Length: 131
Image (tube, rainbow, N blue to C red):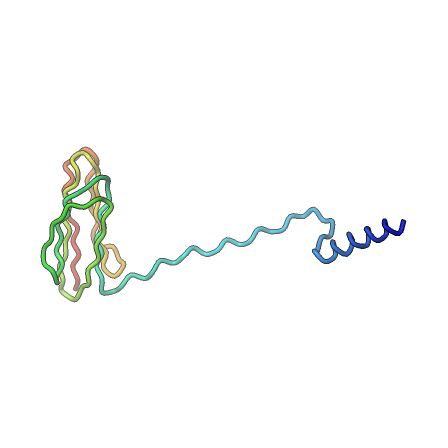
């Protein structure tokens, strides 16, 4: 009998210490965390992004280095430092029959967006100019 009282006392103590009250109410789920904030875009930066599948011939101009041309795998992106009165562009010649799109941002704000649908001859150009 003494063992039964001791065991009951231990169970009661354990329930008291862990906060169990015999209630069947479920605990509230934790509040969802806020989504991660992306890094702020630099005010003095232009970014060109090209999306699609496969590869594309990309021609672009930056003020410091001039005009470039290269064959790239998609997706592709490039960032450039900018100053006032800059004119930058990217021209994309995608794979025939595949969709391709380009997007230009300056200081994180979209300034140009173009796309060519699947089945067309995918040649597009996005530009970025600064005041």
